[in-house]
Amino acid sequence: METKLAKLEAIIPTLATREDLARQTTETMDRIDRLVAGLRTDLDRKFILCMSIQITTLFAIVGLLSKIANIF
Image (tube, rainbow, N blue to C red; front, top):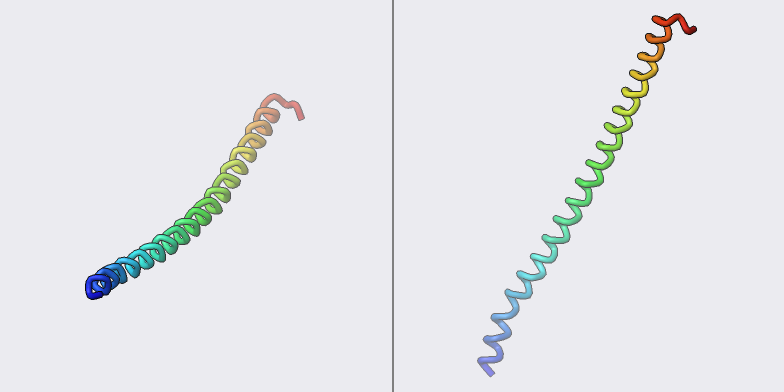
């Protein structure tokens, strides 16, 4: 009977450790998900800004070239 009790007492800390590891893993994955979502939002904002700058530059160059060529 003592050997079974000793085995159970040896298993209980292992189960607690596994539960702690599972909880920590879940918290880490949640944190990573939040960080990735934030990076994605930031990247989308920067991409839109870069595209806007490129389109504005294109219109400015077309305007300057048309002014030089007296098209308009």
